[in-house]
Amino acid sequence: MVFSSHTSASYGGIVGRGVTVGHRCNSGAQPRASHVTYRRRQSQRCIVSPSSIDLQRVSVTGMPCAPEAEECSVSDRFSVELRGQDSIAEALSAGSSGILDAASGAAQDVTAAVQAVAQDALTARRFERQQSRAREQTTYKMAAILASTGITAMAITAVHLRFTWHMRDGAEFPILEAAATLLLTFGGVVGMEMWARWAHKALWHENEAGWSLHKSHHVPRVGPFEANDIYAIANAVPAMGLCLYGFLTPTLMGGVCFGAGLGITLFGIMYMFIHDGLVHRRFPVGPLADVPYLKRCAVAHQLHHSEKYGGIPWGMFLGPQELEAVGAKEELDRMCEELTFSSKKN
Image (cartoon, rainbow, N blue to C red; front, side, top):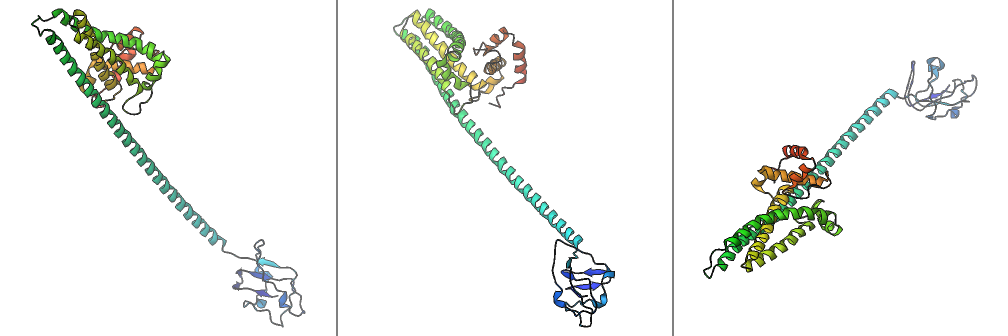
């Protein structure tokens, strides 16, 4: 029998690789070492028992058997692979475990990096929105202050000049005209509340042309102004006309028109501070947010925007009375307790 190996042989078995053994030995034949084939077959594995191998006839040098040895005729060939399978399995297991750990660590690092980038982007967007809101509030606040200060100063000056100008020839102070002017000033405020209630419902919501402008007030605003602001200018036109006519007319009717114009102007200033400032926070209103009745008016207007009661209240300063008339007093009271219109938030 001829046995060739690149490793060693022992009685307990053969430890090595690429060992090819031929069997069915026939005595008396000439050795034919060329029939011994070295082949490695991965698809077949064979374990050789010690009793099947004559250790006297094994050549561990890879050389053929001596001539005096028995001739071995190779009719069958089989491959013997003896591998350190446990060691390989352990190495593969350790390698795969290391790869998985490395992949898991890399995935965690990527996730952390993505989360950090997302958090930074969110923080940047919040900061940008805060800055944009601050700029919008500053812009509208300056507009409100300038308009209010200018209009108030003009109104006071106009009242003073109207009566002193008509008294320039030594005439007595027109008490009746002054009373009519004062009465129509407060009457103009109340009348504007009634007008605003009707116009808000009939002209701004139920009328398609009016809603095309007013709807900008019921969606998120972009920038310091909105299309609905045009109604403030529209209401200012009759106020200026009445004030001008009353200023130039030294009669009782002139005093009435002058007072009506002042009332509309006063209502516009009040509406701007309560509606635009307190309710929608387009600019800070300071201590006005702590006035209980004004807070009640602000909450009532929020219910208008919720449309829970069909749009009621339509008015501004008498909005709480409108809600009480439809049985919403308890909800209005509850919301006034829950909501806070703090001057710090404005």
